[in-house]
Amino acid sequence: MISKWNELATVKRELAERDWFPGTSGNLSIKVSDDPLTFLVTVSGKDKYKETETDFVLVDEQGNPLSDQGKPSAETVIHLEVYKKTDAGCSLHVHTLDNNLISELYAEKGAITFRNVELIKAFGIWEEDGELTIPIVENWADLPKLGRAIGEKIESVTKAILIRNHGITVWGKNAFEAKRHLEACEFLFSYQMKLLHAKAINLKEVL
Image (cartoon, rainbow, N blue to C red):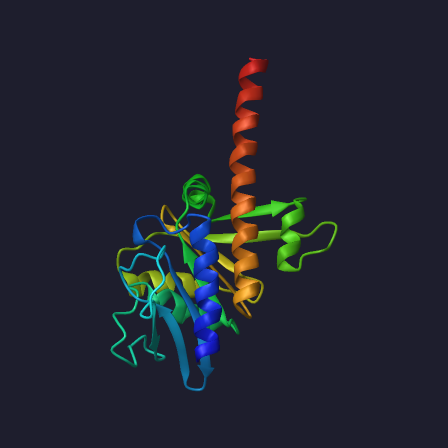
């Protein structure tokens, strides 16, 4: 388990350097075993810009802690859905300005789709006409309900889900792949926001 701890700690450090944990938000997890399902998840309410020996706690397939290391993140249910519905080995959940804006702008469509943008290759999409679709779910305050909503959107090709005005959850077969997916998503969201802004300016100039 030590190697898994270190792997997740490295990802937390790198995401902290990007300032992706405002106000103690966000939570990360990494699978330790499949049968029974156990995984390390961030402890609730901790400052993720700091590193301590109690940053993560091991939980079971119900999300219950298996030690007195601390209280698991309240959003552990999201990670549970990912591990139960996919073969993921790591799941990352962060709140950024761009992913919140995108989730609100495209909420009524229920998803955002990217085409002809280089970074979709981070998801293994290499076809000339390939596309990446990221579903968007409502931000239910009832966390079990939120977990179920996320689970209902997960398909074999899904690697990320946006929660409206909340954040994004991404996953991968390991921490490296999950981080790659997260970085690609955040690039795509930033690109889309800037593209929409540029188009709005051009429209005003034409008018």
